[in-house]
Image (cartoon, rainbow, N blue to C red; front, side, top):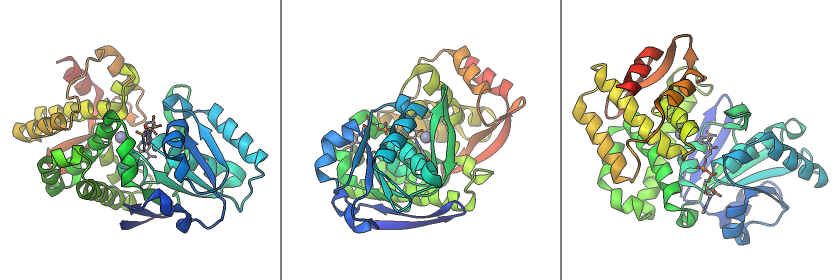
Length: 340
Ligand SMILES: NC(=O)c1ccc[n+]([C@@H]2O[C@H](COP(=O)([O-])OP(=O)(O)OC[C@H]3O[C@@H](n4cnc5c(N)ncnc54)[C@H](O)[C@@H]3O)[C@@H](O)[C@H]2O)c1
Ligand SMILES: [Zn+2]
């Protein structure tokens, strides 16, 4: 087990990689936590939960809604939850985003922690303190920055995760390597078959390296004013594609990273062989490099992006494998790229 302390102006947290659900009890400040989970995780792993009331929500992005918040707040009132209660979210990014928001707002805030059960939530949602829900089709529109006290990344729980979900986690892992750490990128390339077979040593290293990179960036820029924007590599196009095609986040981000690399090459900032190497790696991890999206729908979605400022957008580009930077890119350049 490896642990990483996160200290930022949105709070302190410890991420424990390789810690198990069965040891959750040891990290709790109360005897009976209030557990928030989803149907799948409850079915598969509920028998290993510690004792305490369980609030179960459905699955899918539509569940990150005000209706679900209302349902959970009702349950908390029925349970007579108060400031001394402790909430644990056990699940993927959706459960953790909801549980973190509920815990941050119910009675102006309760203590909380997470057991992160998908690869994507372990390498991404586990760090950064972003919680929230969607509103009227706008993703993560309402939320807060607030760190859980701890995040347990139980690698054994990944054994029940569907393969496509696993690949979405690899998309974010590859993103971390390509924006910030060339040696990590080399490692991801070299250990592809072990990673896909869930070799625990390889997975532990990939999760650890990802958490280190994300926490290093977040610690310097908790509220996404500068450096943290680099973590959005592939996400401008990714979010737009995800919205229009209704596909998984990691798949959309994979295709988004390809478009962002193409733009980097087109601008003369990235040498073509570096870009080709990234496309090859995404394919090795069974991620899409091209998706059949509707160009005008994607461009319409980009124009709605939170990072747009007038006719420009803060866009993450690559200069080489392991190094990214943010530039103001005219929307017209993105239009030309998508239409070319
Ligand atoms: N807060 C952040 O910083 C942050 C970062 C990245 C993503 N997110 C959010 O996370 C969400 C996506 O997270 P996700 O990819 O984990 O999706 P998810 O939570 O929907 O989980 C994916 C699927 O896997 C199932 N599942 C979870 N753990 C399992 C396990 N161990 N075995 C079998 N099935 C399991 C879930 O029930 C679900 O059907 C999005 O809403 C995104 O906005 C948040
Ligand atoms: Zn992402």
